[in-house]
Image (cartoon, rainbow, N blue to C red):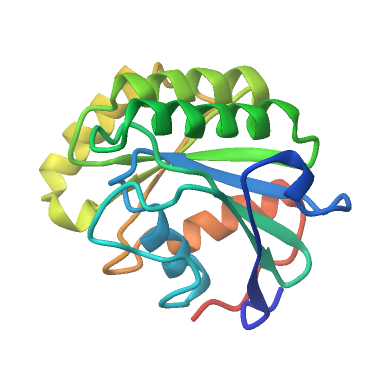
Amino acid sequence: MNLNNLSIEVSAVSPKQYPTGDRPEVAFAGRSNVGKSSFLNKVVGRKSLARTSGKPGKTAQINFFNIDSQLFFVDLPGYGYAAVSKSEQKRWGEMMDTYLNTRKQLRQTFLLVDSRHKPSREDIQMAEWIRYRFGYLIIVATKIDKLSRKQMEENFQLIADTLSFTEDDFLIPFSATTGEGKEDFWELLCDMLEIDKPILR
């Protein structure tokens, strides 16, 4: 897989705008301030494939990123951001529900949680849905560079307990600053999709 061949395919708000074909899709969900855009940019070695912002809640559409014409990374709107109106939160929720519950090309949904905090009620709900749909969870614990090793161990246990981890689940510690977790992410993803691992930058 060539990570030089990347582009945003479409920003969609309804199924009629989704990409056609049967290319596998991997979605990424999480709270608005969890660092999804920074995570996506880091794992593909780009600074601005996914737009980052100092203001959470900027992703108001479902963004499909074409990864070397082999798969799509699907960036879902962040949830749990209080500054967005109730009507906008409802619209985003319905948009995500439609995609997650109807998209046949969806192979897995990665859930990003902030390693510094206990998973929220919305995180628990998303984890329950992912486990129901796919049988297991893959959690990316972001912002680990802001924790000591001792804090990491304690917080990972808290995440596992809160999300009712089983032996089938995975937790990837991740830092968009240092790149820790990038190799583990690609190793897991490529094994899951049975595709060649890219040369990472």
